[in-house]
Image 1: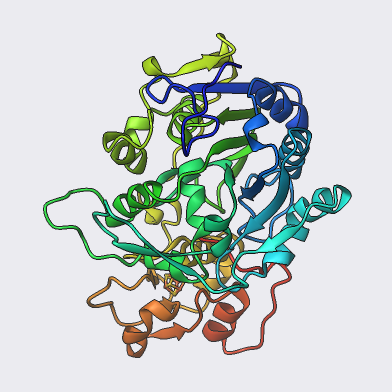
Image 2: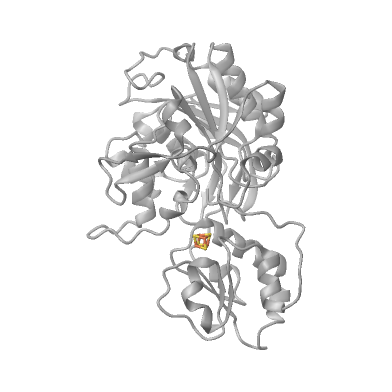
Amino acid sequence: MEQTEQPGFPFLGDRNRPRVAVGAGQGAYDNARTALATWDLSPASGRRVLLKPNAGRIAGPGAGITTHPQVVAAAIDAFREAGAETAVGESPICGVSTMDAFEATGIAAVARERDCPLIDMDARPFRKTPVPDGVAIQSLRVCPEACEFDIVVSIPVMKMHMHTGVTLSVKNMKGCLWRRSKVDLHMLPPVEGVDDKPLDIAIADLSGVLRPDLAIVDGTVGMEGLGPSAGSPKPLDAVVVSADPFAADAVSCALMGLDAHAVPHLRLGADRGYGVIDLGSIQVGPGDWRRFALPFASPPTDLAMEFPDFRVLDRQSCSACQSTLLLLLERYGSELLDYFPAGASPAIAIGRGHTELPNGTLCIGNCTRKHRAVGVYVAGCPPVSSEILRAVSGEPRSDSQDGRPSAS
Ligand code: SF4
């Protein structure tokens, strides 16, 4: 419980030996309260606290896609009891209404019960924020609330991620980027002389300027496999709290059966001194926390392995188009095959990095527009399943599950 407030880091204590608390086995609300109870939140008294969950898409509680509402409820209650003024904010992928996402995730209900404001962080103009140590990016368009609140709390859900290995409290801050500017991070050119993907470098860059003051990682039900939105729910019944988001993510990785050093954006950020990921330098409580670990299945390195009937051509897509494609193939893969010549493996392309595509390719999303002459092109950013099926079949189609996927 002992922590000495450092300027700019109200809850951190010893930044070289950060503390992490794990609450587990008691359900979402009590896990979060147990872990938060080991923290002195009194520096938040009289301050404005922005709670930033992952509510980036339309998904219900327990699906492992968005933050469990009871973890958000616990955060509201804990900070209120510490004398803080709280609000919950989000900026989802374009095409998703923030307030619809808050309703679907159950976060709106718990916020309403507590008379806690919900903020659509895309509603007001962005703040252009320099990234002084940026390697892949030099500035960001940031939602104004992320700059205006005294304290920002990142409350992600514990997920594997096709593009970035995992998405936890560091990457969740990408949801503070304004509107479509989130997508820009997926479209960066390679950084000369650096082997890491530009997206991973950009997230490390971002973590130098959008650092949450507290991380509350929701592992109530996480997601394994094809995260961030098309994987399988993974019940873990754990919540991880730390004032060092890198330490919180490192312990979360360990609970997921991963080494944080194998997650490029965490390794890169830690190498720059933004946080600590060496478990030997992190004080974790309770001492037997590793008994809560449950390995998460990794995302496939190649989507084509998951869907061998198709040739999935993915170059520099963002997770919104990837989620669209995964959901389409999961729900309608066998039907889609009927619209292509028998015996062929239809090519489907997403992303803007293609130089050429085979004839007959199904080109999904605005990023593939320049190749539209080679086959069937479906505009949208991203398009939804019904639009793709309509384009392929030539008939009006509907899909009751059509919701815009999120780039989380
Ligand atoms: S078209 Fe698809 S890959 Fe391109 S920016 Fe839009 S969602 Fe991302």
